Image 1 (cartoon, rainbow, N blue to C red):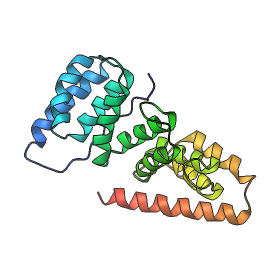
Image 2: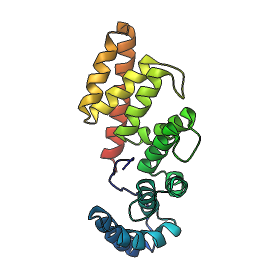
Image 3: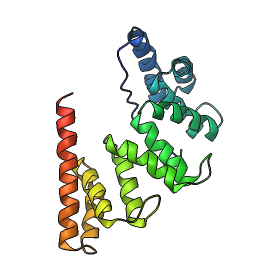
Length: 200
């Protein structure tokens, strides 16, 4: 399995079909979690074709990992792409992974950075760590130890222990002013993120 099994989260507008979508989607999610990929595909395929972002992401996971079907990067990219266009953060993260590794597409740090950035802003820790590393190395974006520190701090603030350790390792390479700037940026982001989620 190449791509971690992220929880499937889909924020969808309320529409008349939402009740039936939810029931079928939940059945597919339960089947997927139980390893019953045939049922998951049966439930999700119709929903994915109808534009359900969570089901599209689920179909991306199915094809990216070859669960119940032959592994197919092109179909994984298709389904992740459709979900990502609807702002599905985990689909955006997985598109970042595929572009970073050249799975089904020519390897592209710029594309990986783009997708990771969109997901990171929505609070996906794996994407935040991804862009922190990219800023540190100058892959897909101009090298910036300040922004690398910022994103490791954010990921740490959202509960990733290793991100905190990586952030702390950067401090020895930074001036006190850079550390202050990065810390202020991370604090502002986390406060904004907390406020946004408190009001939802």
